[in-house]
Image (cartoon, rainbow, N blue to C red; front, side):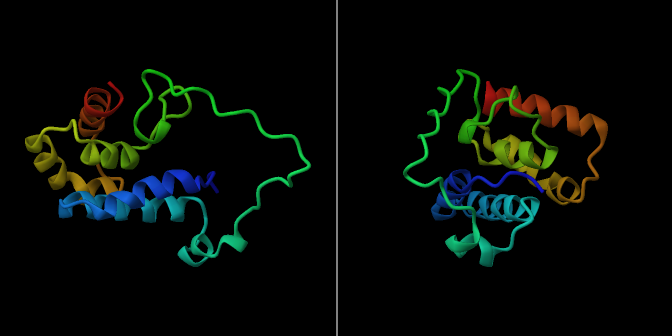
Length: 137
């Protein structure tokens, strides 16, 4: 079970209001993957009582999050924190406003294979390059 970050999910869900249907669909798929990978159901996500509660007020306040690194990608992800899966890289590149339209069109032809984990090693390298160029760069 991976760590669930409600703030990141909220940022992804805000993209659902995009005037571009492809971006909204990509955000929906990324949100669904985040919930599934955290081992949660949508009922649990919506029911705030099912998620861990913050520490009581008497507990010392947690340290503020570190400043976002200059090379951090959207939603604060940094390559130093963890390696993103091809699935995450795919949607981040697809959702990035810096990604050219022709690259987004090419990526859409990969979507089924990326979701099924069937991209070739060369496509995986290309995806990493696109992520570095259009998202983390």
